Every structure is written in structure tokens, then in C-alpha cells.
Length: 375
Image (tube, rainbow, N blue to C red):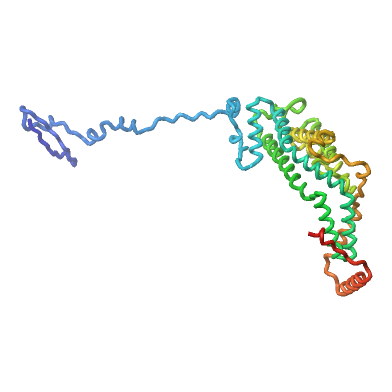
């Protein structure tokens, strides 16, 4: 057996021929030699190899609908764009959604239950505000006297006497435990809780969360729209009037000017009545529930047992409630005097004021400073 390799030129092509012969014909003819092309060598199994390289058709990933996710107890806040880890309103929405899916209660019940839970957790806020308000009302006449004395000394230009009265007022307030700025953090915390719940419910309703359209009760079955009969805004405005009158969250109205008092008691609730229907029924339901709980706290604080348990001061008598009210005319006069004092005085005014102070210092009583009380 032997093999021969022949190069034949047919036209302009070179063909590589492999001839394997054994015993019969040592030099086969051109007709008997089978020519192999590059297609036979390199492309013989190309379709099979290409079939292996082509990937299979991908199967589309199944994405469940929002209703299916809710039926399986899964959260849909991220799908609706209602979840941001650093926002308190997002965590409030997650709490309400978890309660709705886990406890299987309707949305109107979820809103009421969440509101009651928040107000119970924030119960120390109205208790401390009630203590500070009662303490301030008890010593309001004395504080009013100090204020009148300081204003009188300021009008006379006696800055030394004004500073002395201010030190005496500070010592009196420290002795009685009166902290005017202590109520400010409590009011800010109460407002932060309200705004967190307000924003959480507003976005839930505006995003058409599944179940909000029929999650109401009675006449307000759709929580994504306003109350069609205006009953929820009317109740919210009326309850807000009694909340201001009770003074649980805003303080006493005894020392406020008459115009400011009527504006808070009637003007602000009327504004809420007009604008509350622009909000959804979910927000109005929360507002009504929160005001109702505040009024319940006000009734609870009137009980003698609760006052003893929470160490609340007893209510003031009618005589102590008759505190001289600040009038707008006096406030306007003080403001005009303050503006006049801030204006740069003329040289003649300075000479006249200096002469008056010199005469007053020579004829007036000496200022006695008690070094034991001044710290």
C-alpha cells in the first residue's frame, strides 16, 4: 500500500489530491482520483457546530401583578415608588401595610388602629404639656407683674432697673420650676408625628394603592377621593375648635389677645373646613381620629384619680383664671416704642435723656441688689 500526493492545475486552481492505492494501480487516472475541497475538510460539520453555538431562546421571566403579590402577603411599596429607607413616612407606610396584610383588617380600620397606637405611644407629650401649662397658668399674675415692671423701666430708659427685674424674674421662674422653652420641643415632636402620618396617607391615596378605592366604610368607601358629603371635614373642623379650647396641644388661650384667640377658635377651623375637602378621605379620617383622641385626653385629665396617678396639678379656680389679658393696643404701643428705640437718636435727644437720667439718679430711690439671690 502506498500513497501519492498529486497537485493538478485545472484552469487557475490548484487542487490538492490524496490518492491511496493498494496493489492494483500505482498511478490512477485523473477520473478515478476524488478531489477534496476546503469545504469538505473545514465546513463538513459546520451546521452542527453552529447549532451548538446559538443559545436557546430565553424564557420571559414571570412578573406577578400587584394583586397577586398582595394575596401572597408581599409588599408592593417599592413597585409603586412609595419606599425610601431614610424617610419616616415610608416606614409609617410599611407599618400600615404590614398591619393590613398580617392582621387582615380593612384600610379604614388600619388607619384608626395606627393612629390610636401612635397617640398612646406619644402619651407623655400631652402629659408634660399639661403640667407646664398648669404651672404657667398658676403663676401667670406674678409673671405679668414682672413683665409690666420691665416694660415700665424700659420706657423710662432705666436699663439697670430693667436688668434687675429680669434677674428677679429668672430667679422666680427657676424657683417655681417654670421653663418657657420646654413646651417647644414637645410641640415640635407632636407636629412631626402628625406630618409623618399625613404625608404617608397622602401618598398612599395619590398612588392608588390597591384596596384604597374600596377600603373605606359607610358613606366614604373610596379613600382616594374627598368626602362627597363634607361630613369628615366638618367633624375635623369642629373637633379642632374644641382641641384649641381645651389647650392640650396649643397651650392656654387665657393670656392671648382677643383677636388671636378668636382667630384660633373660629378662623383656623373655618379654614380647615374650606380646605379639608381638597384632601382625601384617608387624611380626613386620620385627622378626625387624632382630634377625638386629644379630646379624650382632655376629659381624662379632669379625673382626680388620673391627676393623682400622673402627678398633674389640680385645675385652677375661676379666680385664678381671671388673668389680665394682653391687648393688641398695648402690643402695638410696645412695638412702636421698640422701633423708636432702635432708630439712631439725635444729639439733642441724647443730651435730654442724659439730663433726665442724671436727675432721676439723684432724686430716685437707690437700687438694692440682693447678692444672695443673684447667681
